[in-house]
Image (tube, rainbow, N blue to C red; front, side):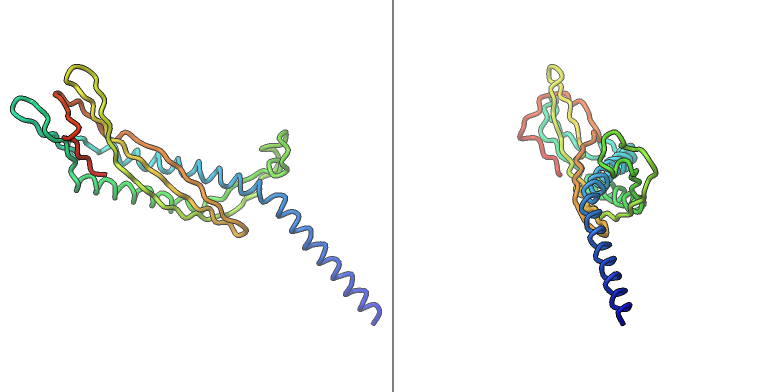
Amino acid sequence: MKKRHTFLRVSGLIIFVYIIFVISVDSLYRPVIMSNIETRSGVMALNIVNEAVTRQIKNAKYENMVSVHKTGDGTVTAIESNAAAVNSFKSETTLAITNAFEKNNKKPANISLGTLSGNVFLLGCGPKMKFKFDTANSVNIQLVSSFESVGINQTVHRLYLEVEVSTKVLASWHKTKTTVKTNFLVAETVIVGDVPNTAIEISK
């Protein structure tokens, strides 16, 4: 009976020490792991957006998205967007980005033991450990325009696509959120003639 009690005490002590060890390791390494995962997810999001949007804007044409109306003497009376073409472009781009995220969602983060140690001299050194995580992404796209005078009665009209991706990083022990914002030149043209502000109507 005495041996049994001793065994139970020793077992309990071992379990207690193990729990304290796990908690200590978790509190020590979690910030490093999550910081690395957050950085990697942000870089991955930017790369995915760049590749997806670059493919989409290859076929984008200014004349399909915007109509410039003039009078017989060349006076610009209105600059308006083709709502159907703009909405279609935005929807296709959003879908392309979403699909790209789904394909890359399961890639693990490989973090070296040297990096986990927190020692700047050991960053990237030693064997790497894989940490699995999931991401939940929301994509927001806006089409904006800018006008720049480039000469007498000449104005460059540019269409930009502003993309904002919010990524929730979901790990078994923690979750965090990163946001990536970037913009792309979609199309541009030179408009000859005065462009009054009241003539501009670009749908977002």
